[in-house]
Length: 156
Image (cartoon, rainbow, N blue to C red; front, side, top):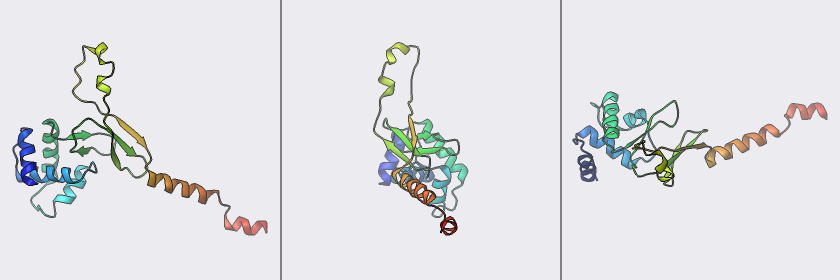
């Protein structure tokens, strides 16, 4: 697997250092759209010399070279995605999980009337609630709809 990661970096004109290979390998194996903090926390126990600055600079370089996508879905965190094929993203407003959504091709729809624009990237984000958060919300709604036990006692 590491030889494939190394070849992928070289293909994207990125010199494959130990840190860069580790970060890219993590992104390939963790399709959760992680943040810098998540990547650093996962890699630092096995790489004590790794700094958060190195992770930041590596991710910046990988994004600049087109090896990964940099996602700014919410105002809190920038996330990273190893899948560079065209696709959209869904973020849960409850738990914050991010999922890939089937490929879309908005840049090909009616773009002939925008001949003066040179589109190099398209990002589409859907926001809502995942099934787990919806189930939790429904449970809370049911709980709040039940009369309080002390009110039951007063009414008896």
